Length: 423
Image 1 (cartoon, rainbow, N blue to C red):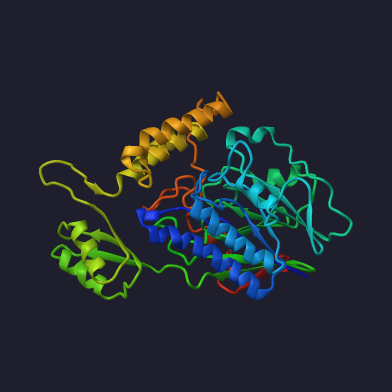
Image 2 (image 1 turned 180 degrees about the vertical axis):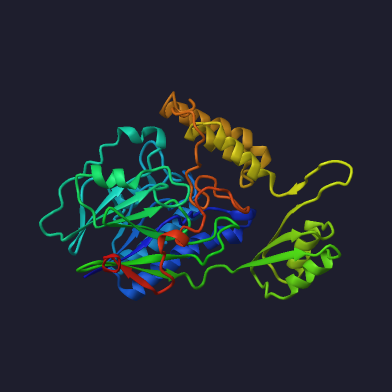
């Protein structure tokens, strides 16, 4: 029997809401996974991509990551991983550095055997280049009874999919018992062509739309394949306050609802709907901060119609509309990256021009055609997961953070499912 933790989308280095505390939270969530791995004495930790939030993690992020990997190494627990779309570079990867340090193994077409399980890897590949993939893997060693593929991307049959899982399994030169995925931040499990396909979900909430508890999968391979869901117990608390206002209600009602919750050190997301009076989001956010919240955000989703003319005012984040329009333009992956850099609050306004110029130069040096439009010219889904590439602070980015479990039988915390249950 082989037991491994399947994790991914840790997005270390993401300073969500421009808060240093949130940046630390993403690293600490990864540390929690490693701590659980040591406590449970698992046979390996498998990371399905997006270890880092971007290609240039800060020194403190690298130091923290190495410290966590050393914890695993000192406990004799291998760290197996692939490269996701957020951290992927055109030259050597950060994962290669960790491998040189003896702290990680980068998975690929050559099997890496743990006990009786052969692990293979499939790094993130842009949609425009997938037609050239052959899915050729070296044969499973005779010492292995199981084969597992680790991949990164938005795979069918889960939400926002743009990668055909059945094609991968049919064309692969190895018969896989399970496919462990990253990129979609919503955990979910499905059976495709007699093979378990599962997303572990992200280890921290990278978007306000990610309401479900964050965690990882515990995979057990013996006579069959079993997948259990584990929650990260010490993750930063997110408090979601949903308010539906009646016609005569306003800010006082919103404050009353906020008072019902313990906000200490929490990220507070207040969502307002209904027919009530206009409110000032900043005032509600300040009220939540006074009650101990670390961060507060108000999303007023109401539409106000005028009596004299047909007028609809949406109080949603305008970035959502921008993202939707960008996806319709059929831009290349590189162009979408530049767009995100311009709109990312993590880059100071004074540094945006320099950052973009430097990144464009790097991209063109790597590939002169990198900024050309996508080949199919169709709307491209941003490759993130909680966001699928644009990991964001706002509600619903339409990228892959939908509740995949509703249609794919995701196990709850501690619950197990196995192939036998589908027979």
